[in-house]
Image (cartoon, rainbow, N blue to C red; front, top):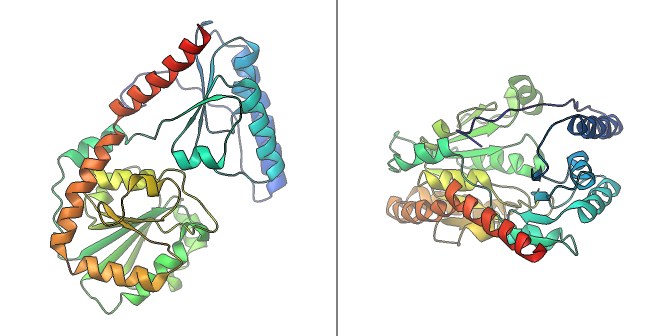
Length: 324
């Protein structure tokens, strides 16, 4: 958590282009994690907070040492399925409480027999602070700036974003930006320069996404609903904290954050014709964007660290009360 001085210890893990090697590396990393925790001097009352299903070594150590184990789950599914089944089994055997980032997340990956609660992700303090003082003004740069932040994966809707850029090439006042969560060489390998439309700029991973939100008039999440379900949608809430309207998938976590036509629009990215029409419509209606902006900022205020802390304390209190 930002602004909190706590010691950080890292353990070995390495991804590979070969899935079997990545899986082997992951299993070895969890053995190492278990060993490191076993050698540690954490107090007996320390709570083991396992973020995502993956660090099962911490959950096993927490259960063996008699500590409370809390899982905070962000996944809908993991591959291969046998790995997911194993990780869910470990969570079922070790967890005192399972937290989910959305109701949809809980419905899609239930862990039976364990107390559960929904605790959405908070907007990082640095981004929330920057958004608080940002004045949203459509086309303040002289261009209608459309922004998307995503991993360099087709199922994240990158091809649809490229197609949208091509279709909007007749509108010289519309400009698009794509920030890929990857290093520069990975970006070049995934998206050759020859495939990038002239009205689209590509950027590698940024440590300061707030600088992109400050320039945006509209933020998109185009994840393909038949291939990837967004369990929450942090970039959407971050953008909304700057008062930037958004377009997001009509399923998963985004559908709980956004009311269609209020803070933005819910659109299936596979319908590129509809997506194009709606983007053109928004670009031509600054008054509507301003209305959406005010509602987006109000909605984003529900995802502060303060709200996160309140929800977390309530969930913990419910478990402690049940054990009393």
